[in-house]
Image 1 (cartoon, rainbow, N blue to C red):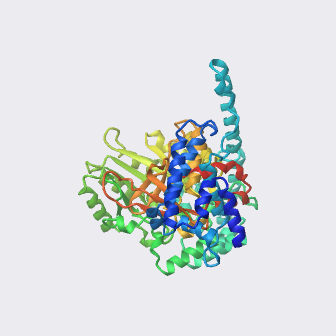
Image 2 (image 1 turned 90 degrees about the horizontal axis):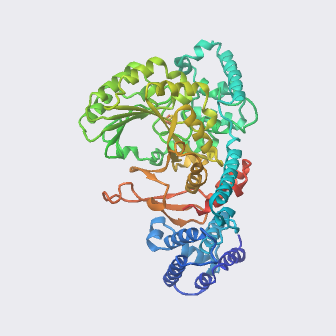
Image 3 (image 1 turned 30 degrees about the vertical axis):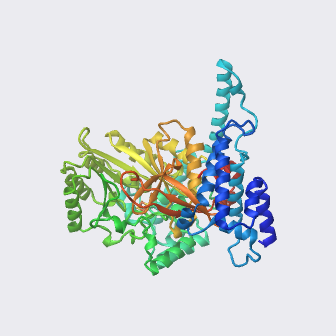
Length: 599
Ligand code: SF4
C-alpha cells in the first residue's frame, strides 16, 4: 500500500481518539510519546469506572480490556519479548518519508488496530443500542420476556448445530454401509472380517493408488499422498475410518474427517523441509527436554506419561508427535521390553507420581497380553491411583474394543483404590457412529469413564461445530475433557485457529450448553511446561500485533506463584486470515464479529 494511503487509513482510525492522534502525529521522541499515551490510557481507564451514561451497558468491559491490551503492547518489556515495537511501527508509518524499507501493514493489521481503537472508545457495536425489554419489567412479565429471548437464542444455536451431520443420523449410517460394502469388495473380504480389528490393521490404506481405488479424491490429494509415501512421511487410514469419508465430490459433510487423514501439499512440503534439516521445531512440546528416561515424559508434579508404542493404526495429519512417529507398521515403534521395564522401574521408584497416562502412539494397538502385563505392573505400585489410557481406537478402529480387551483392562479398575480412565479423541460429530458408541459403552458398562480431548482446528471451528460434538459425545457416554489449541507447528498452519476463536467459542457457544455437556477446559500447551488455561486473561497477555496482523502472546507458566519458571512467547495466526478462510468455505463472517474482542 502506498505511503499516502497507509497514512490516511491510520489517521482515519485515529480520528476516533483525537488526543491519541495528536500525540502520534507530534514530533516528540518515541519514549515521550509512549509516556503520554500511557498517561492518556490510564485516564481513559479511570474514566471507565465512573458512571458514564454515554457508554452503552457492558461496553465498559470491552473498554477496560482493550485499554489493557494497548498498554501492554506499547510497554518496552513487551516490545523486547515480542522483538517488535508496535508503537515505533505506527510512528514510522506516520512520519517516515519513505516506508519502502519496512514491512507494509496488512489488512489484518489494520483490522486489529481499528477494532482496538473501537474497543477503547466504546464503539464495538457488539451490543444492541436498545435495552432488552425484560430488563425494564419485573415479575412474571419480565420472566416471560426473558424466557422468549432465551428461546430465541436456543433456536439460533440449533440452526447452526443442525448443519452438522452426525454419524448416527440414519442417512449417514446408510451411506457408511454402502462404503463398507465397497471397501470389502475391493479387498475380497467378508463382513465377519470387517468386525475383526486385526483385519483392519492388515489392510491399512497406505498409498495414493489404493486410496484412489477406494474413494474419490482430488488430484491434489492424490499428489500429496504420493509425495508423503515417497518421502517416508507417515500416512495411513484404517478401512473403517475410510468408510466415514464420502465417496463423491461434495465435501460439505466429510471435510473435517478428510482433512485429518489426507495431508495437504503444504503439510508434506513443510514436513519434508523440517525432516531434511532435522529441525527441532517439530518437537513443539520439547518432549526431549521433559523425558527423564526413555518412554517417560513428565511435566507435572503428580502425573507422568508412559509411551510404550510410537505408532497408531491411523495417522492424524496434525499429530503433535509427528516427529516421533515413523510409520504405521514401523517395527521400531514398540518400546523394547528392556526399555519398558526401565520406564516402569522409574515409575515404581518415583512415589510422587500417582497418575500415569499411557499414550504414544496408540497403546491399544498392542496385544492384550502386553497391555495386561503393563497394567498389572502399574497396579502393583501402591502410589499409582489412576491410569489413563490415551487411545483413538474408538474413533479410528472401534472393532479393537473387544469384550476380552475390556475385561483385561477392567480387572485393574478397582473403585476406592485405583481408577482406570479412557481418554479418546473425537474431532467431529461425523465420527460418532453406532460402532464408536458401542465401543464407548463397553467401557462405560463396567464403570470405566471415557473422556474426550478435542484438538480445535480450522476444520471443526465453525460456529457451534464443537458444541454439536459435545452434545453428541455426552449422548454416547463420553465426557468432554480438554479442548486444545492446535500446536504452533509450521507444517500444520492449515489447521491453526486464532486463540481468540477458542475463547469466543467457549464464551458464546459452549456456554449455552448445559453444564454437564460443556465440561471441557480450553488449553494452550506451553512447550516443556504443559497446559495453560485460556479461559481467562489471568494466564496470558497479548503483547504485540505484528504488521501481518498476527498477535503475539506471552503465556504464564501453570506453576506461577509456586515456583520460578519463565514465560513463553507465542505468535498466533492472524484473525483476519482465519475469517477469510471461513468466508471461503461459505461462512458468514459477521457471525464471528466479536472475535476481535477476545484477548
Ligand atoms: S491418534 Fe494421537 S498419537 Fe496417533 S497420530 Fe493421531 S494425534 Fe498422533
